[in-house]
Length: 203
Length: 85
Length: 244
Image (tube, rainbow over all chains, first blue to last red; front, side, top):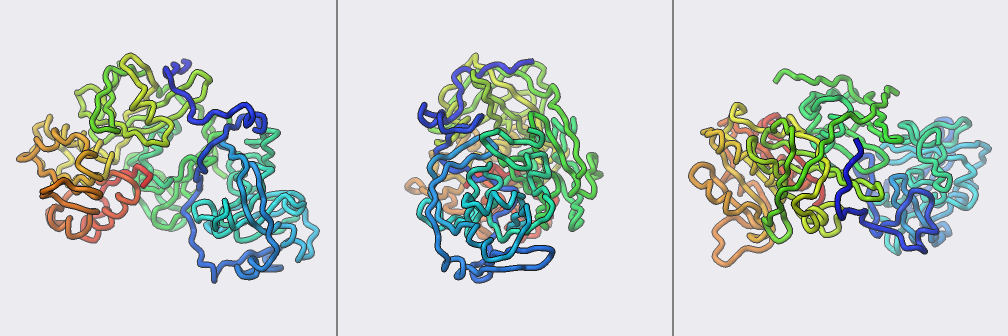
């Protein structure tokens, strides 16, 4: 049975011609900033907050919040694409490039697993976070990143679907072998390139 | 958006072929037992995540992959569809 | 990982709109013709699916506002930045069609055999399923004692006001208005708190059955207050609508 068309119903946002040209396949532009979560919003007090790079059960290097704030930060303007099909163009962030953090440890691994407060994880090839296309972001739109959007700090990796930009991130685990994170485990694509429409495993 | 198991009644109806809102869910992590209707549910993400209201462990994950429901129930120790009440 | 993939079964049916009536400035009740509807219990909801001409579809859940035996109706509040509610409350006309799945819900439901005394606490559009409970209670001739505490922003935001007022005598209906009250208002004001519940909630010793419905923060705050008044957790039934 095919569904009857609901007379006069259409999706809320429809892209202009200019916007449509910049969108990966299957995406549409949204004006708001949807909050999507897999669990409750964590609230780690800043004096207790750290970001760590770990390997084999050991912490190689760790930064406190003041130490992170003391590092050179960049302003990043990026389009972001959620696998649930909304995109936001021209979002403005401020954060420390992940490359600057990784440069402070010796590593020759191929993969990382980002881990967050609340247990969320997501995996990435190390070259996707060390090549100047990933940030540890703590400001959005000129304001401190709100908890519902991943504050105090989240991973920002705009060239991949936004589930890879882990909210409430607390560190990176360096891995010799790739390991699927939370959504990758439940059928989502291991890499997640929106321009190849890699939403699900096997795409 | 934080809802409860009532909000996924229709989705569970599709998956299980029956209403599961009053089915009794037992958390594999903390042992808490209660109706699916009272679990904490996160919707509108890449998938639906159902968590134990007491300890927040994941009970179920439902991901809609290419139009099919992929269901993981490994966070449940038990799911009793006809609880004696 | 224990997983299984299940394709959707034939659970959706086509509904035809028969009427759209205004309850308040932003709230509409939609009556549906659903051939083959199996009947429903008070408190249950249905899912609506709207499909656009380009194939885009959206689904939402709405509590059933009517009692079993009456035509199926839902009551929808327009959310200004919503995608579905502005369509249902402002565009929809008799004769239009949508898909419906239901009835759904075996937990947040009440029938006379469930007993009482009943304490119904509703915030905003959370009044819809408890109104269905009160209608069913009246239609079935049940003598189970019932009290409703209904929290709304202002008197103009109270849904079903005339209908709820006519229960006086057979059920106790009290309102609390949280943002503005009319001159000479003799009802409650402000958020539901323990002092307010002390005046309307059945004592725990009477083994009451409570239903709380509305926005998530409202439901959780009220449920906590009832449990603090020694209501049994298993006899406090909740349905969260999300949002603030």
